[in-house]
Length: 345
Ligand code: C2E
Ligand code: MG
Ligand code: MG
View (cartoon, protein in one colour):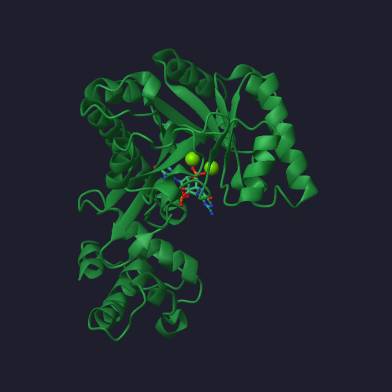
C-alpha cells in the first residue's frame, strides 16, 4: 500500500500530540484500511474524501485538523506524481472577441492519482509550493507545453501561443529566466509562442530582483501577462514599470458582471485602464451569453471560459487544430462543431 510504504521510510520518533511529523506516520497506518475498503468496492468515494472522515480524536491527536491531514496525504502522494507519470496538461482556448478567432491557449495542470482520483490544481499547487516540489513540477509543465506546441507545429498544424502559469515560488528560484531560455532552446519553440502568466502578488513581492527577471524574460521575446487581475494589490503604479502585455480579469468579477453594478464597474475600469496603457485585456471565466455580451459591448479584447470551451485534452486540441474552420469567425465554434467534448476543469 503506497501510503504506508512511503511513510515507513521515515522512522517515527515517538508520539506527541499535535506533532505533525509524528502524526504523519500514524495516519499512514490508518489510511490503508480505508483504501482497502474502497478497492474492495465497499466504498465508492475517492480515498481523499474518505480520509477526511477519519476520527482523529480516536487516535489521540486533537490538534491536527482534517485539512492538515489531507494536505499531508496529498503532499506525500505528490512526491511520486512526476515519477509515476500522473501529471498531464489540458489546454483551454482563448478567443479574440472582435475577430472570433482563436488567439492562444492556456496550459492547465492536472493530476490524476491512482487512489485519490483527479485532484484539483487549486488544492495541490500550494502543497507543491510548500513541499519544495513546485520547481520540478513547474519545469515539467513548461517543458511539456513548449514541446507540445512545437510538435504540433512540426506536424504542420496552425498553432497559437501557449500561456503557462508560473508560481511565485518557482519564479523566485535562482536562474528562472535562464531556465526558460534553456527550455525554449531545447524544445525549439520560438519565444513568441510562449506567454507566462504571473500574479500581482508575485510582481510586487520581490522588488528589484523581480524587475530584473521580468526584463530578462521580455528580452527573450516571451510575453508576460497578469493573471487574476484585480484581486491583488490596490496600487497599480507597477503597471508602468513592468514589461507586461496582457491583463487577465479575474473570473470572480466576470461571474456577476452582467448583474452586479460593482463588478461591472470594476470590469469596465480594468478594460479602460488596459486600453490607455496599451495592454491587451482578456476576461476569464465567461460562462453565459449575458457575460459575453457585456464584455463585447465594453471593448474587452479577448475571452476564455466555458461559454466558448472548457479546457481540452491534447487529443481534442489536435483534432480541433486539424479542423480548418476551428475558431474562425465563430465565437461558439467548439460547442457547435461537436468537438466540445471536455474533461472537467
Ligand atoms: P488560473 O490560472 O486563473 O486558471 C483559470 C482557471 O479557471 C482554470 O481552473 C480553468 O479551468 C478555470 N476556468 C476557465 N474558464 C472557466 C469558466 O468559464 N468557469 C469556471 N468556473 N472556471 C473556468 P483550473 O484548471 O482548476 O486551475 C486553477 C488554478 O490552478 C489556475 O488558475 C492556476 O492558478 C493554478 N494552475 C493550474 N495549472 C497550473 C500550472 O501549471 N502551474 C501553476 N503554478 N499553477 C497552475
Ligand atoms: Mg492562469
Ligand atoms: Mg486566473
